[in-house]
Image (cartoon, rainbow over all chains, first blue to last red; front, side, top):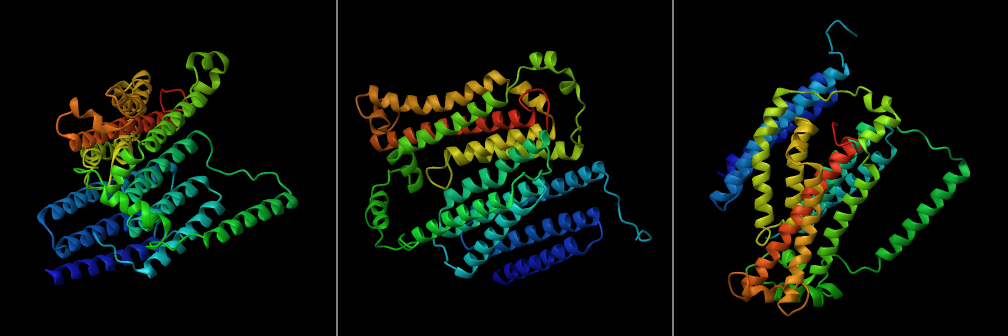
Length: 100
Length: 342
């Protein structure tokens, strides 16, 4: 169980690294938000599931962390969507391969 | 509960706090500064959690990183997000620099007189803290709650009053008579505003999340005796859930549920409930806010009466904080017109 927890947490950190690199390196607003929204949600969920595996005490705490996961799983993509929508309305032009 | 003192982590957080503070002051776009201030508050929250002050961290996360960011953003929505540079010569800037440096130097020199953090021989830890820990109220294992609501009940009463006064002040400064404004300057009222995004996804997601937020907030208020939390935190979360509805739907649907009159009445009701509990104690023949004397009207023994008294007081705090947050948000978002806004 401990091994599973540590594996999940470290792979979550790897995804966090990918998110950060994507946020810094991608060419425009939409691709950056894409990296932030997807990577952030997945890595947070993985780290929290890893925490469930690591905590020794009780079902109740695991249930609480599961509720937090549920909350993040709904809230984070919705926030990303809202920001994408706002960016689209504010007129951010998407990046194309041929546009320099 | 044990907290591991990992000092490297503390140093990292402290550096991040300083970096965020400098960035928030130097950034020109005020919307960006608001977001950086949110991050700053969140770092402070982590520092407090690391120190073991979970109640303070909870409040900081709810108020500093959460609701106050929304307040700043809704203020910027009605004003402007670009900062105009103040007229001020080199002499003025030098003067400001000298004043700030001197004040900082005084504060730092005073810092060395403080006892070390967590030192067992400091006056606070030698006398007051053991008393609170040994004499915490039965049925209230969370010492912070029993200190805040019982041993320092006057303090918390006045804090609640401060929030009430802040709400009244913002209301009386910003609230404008719409009919009068239309007669004076019809152009300002009729000016078309940017319509906030009306997204189905956002609406449905917040509709799904709000009941759970409110349930959690009620748990925080009611369970504050046993775990971190209480009236302030729960009230802020309750207020935030309704502010979320106001942002994702529109201000009108919120005002249809809670009219202006009801809101302001409820803001006062919370403080009144707190003060009335204190008065009830006096009527029973004791001191103000001495909950022990309520045992003849509340169920349970004398110890239970103190616990119930704290619960009543926390509910009062929760009501005031919740509706203050909503009223402040509506004032800021609609520019005091209570019709439409962010």
